[in-house]
Amino acid sequence: MPDNFLEYEMWGKNALYSEPLSRGSEKMSFPIPTYQSLIGTSESIYWKPTFKYIIDDLRVINPIKVESKSMRPLDKRLALNHNTLAFYTYLSDVRYQVRCHIEWNLQREDLAADRNMKKHTAIFKRALKAGGRRDLFLGTRECQGYVKPQAFDSGDGYYDNVTSQYFGLMFHGYNYPSDTGDPMLSVRMDAPIMKNGVVHFKRPEECKIVQPIRKIKYTGGHDQKLFESVDDLYQQMVRGDDK
Image 1 (cartoon, rainbow, N blue to C red):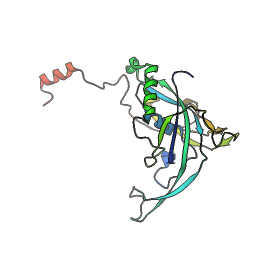
Image 2: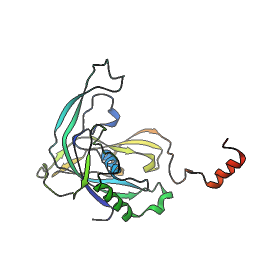
Image 3: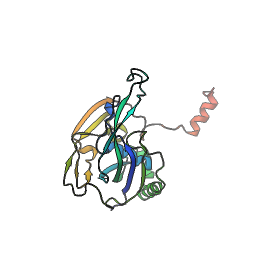
Image 4: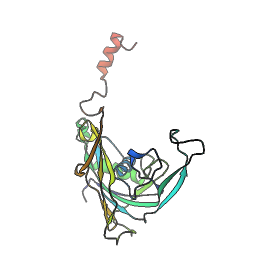
């Protein structure tokens, strides 16, 4: 396996992978994690703007089960009174294996000197052994997740002998200007298929269903003046601009 490929296992008591554009009412989870949620999981383990993650495969280990919980909506627009309850449908007792790889973020040419693949994969593996650098959530904040190093094909999976399973049209992810260089923020959709317990995700540019949302201003990149030089700050002080 190439140096830039990474594997890990994640699990938790509950997960909620819902459509971000429809969050605001009673939530219902997709049957499997979305591509974008797995990007978030990987970035919680270790992230730098030098690179970006590409999710290749997801292996579903435990059977897909759901459970409903009554929740009090935090958004006052949804709550008729203090006794209003919303029913959220979560995935229960989830466990997955993830295979992904790192590619350089070509929108950040200012970080080209930091493109050392062995360094970043080594840091990722150390962070993975420690459970990640940041708190990890399975789709939403109330669903705590955990990760550990694990080979992708290790152990038995519930769907290993299921030839094919179709999940219908699902949210795939967002096209952010920081990744594409296009000022238009767009949403991608795809219809993943699980074969023998493994879902192979399409790359973002391979998704055919893309819906533009709005143009947003990208404030990063190599052409953005992110820091002021010491000489500029000194000249400002001499002129009295800091008063």
